[in-house]
Image (spheres, rainbow, N blue to C red):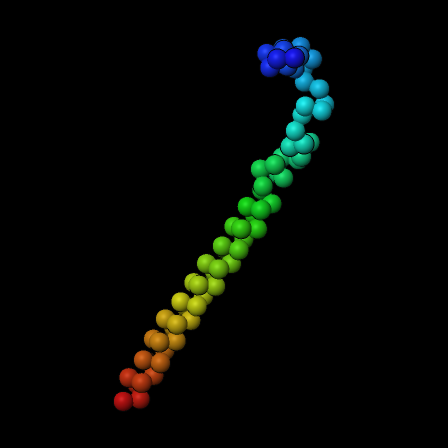
Length: 73
């Protein structure tokens, strides 16, 4: 058969099961990789949270140590 015959065959039969990709049987969250996106966003959020807390600790620690030095003098 030529390619046009295969196209007509698929159009006439609606596509046989062996012509379908396995992707059509996957759930939507797996097909769209939502589980992977959720883990990646969670990791990014955790890193940002840790960075903010570290900056707060450094800023508060520096201002507290500067204030105690000024009061002692």
